[in-house]
Image (cartoon, rainbow, N blue to C red; front, side, top):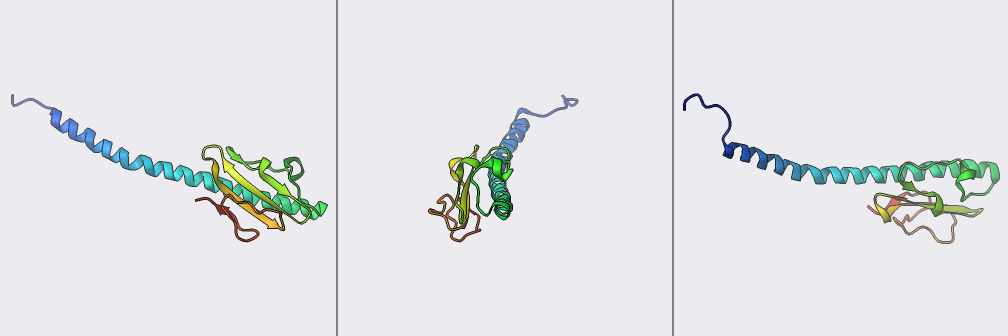
Length: 132
């Protein structure tokens, strides 16, 4: 019995429990990081859309609500194009992400628009506001 080498069942069980505890701590942190990345993509797309709108305005003296006019492409999963409202004196847009649903997202408006976007609730023109 003196030459027996290896781990006992109790030692292996303790290791498995420790790994389980570490996994339980790490998985929620990963989910929060993924959500932050979705919001960063939405903010980036909204800011890029604002740049494209200003470029279009300098050429046409009006804002546009169509992607073809703006030469704008969203990031993967980000939905902006159907959510653009534009007039000759201002525009607004909201961005949502396919992974988050339609109740979470970011919004922005410039100039005078009939109804500023409520998603995120920007309080001033040019401010990007998000739901979280």
